[in-house]
Length: 171
Picture (cartoon, rainbow, N blue to C red):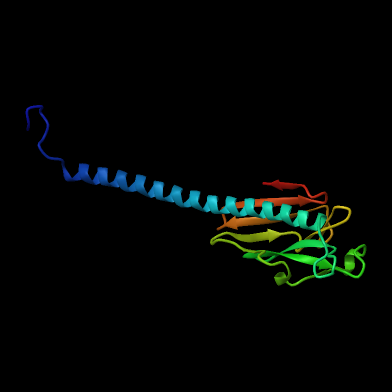
């Protein structure tokens, strides 16, 4: 015993209890940081999609003839790990059922590939198209709104909803 009445050393049980508490706290901090990193990647991808939807709308509403051909509009075509902007062409732009979607290379530098582990887990329309001169949104199949759900694993997801008027909502 020392001058304060305490034993000079700690027992093995006290050391194991301290080590156990430290291990539990460390594992909790690591788990929260990984979840936060995944949520950050997911939020960045959702924000980028919203920006790209607005960019696609602008391209459609203010489009000019490219190579002597006036596109009817622009659309976003999705896969589970990427999306690309494409031009819509037709002999008669008023006939929506005759639209042809261009090759992704026709709109240079506009293909987005998601950063792992973000992926599209569900969507209700593929592609989503924006046409001019009257701003219109077209979903395939036809609906009043479309959604794209991004997810990381099975626990974390965010959904982007686009309505027929071009409004965007994030859930």
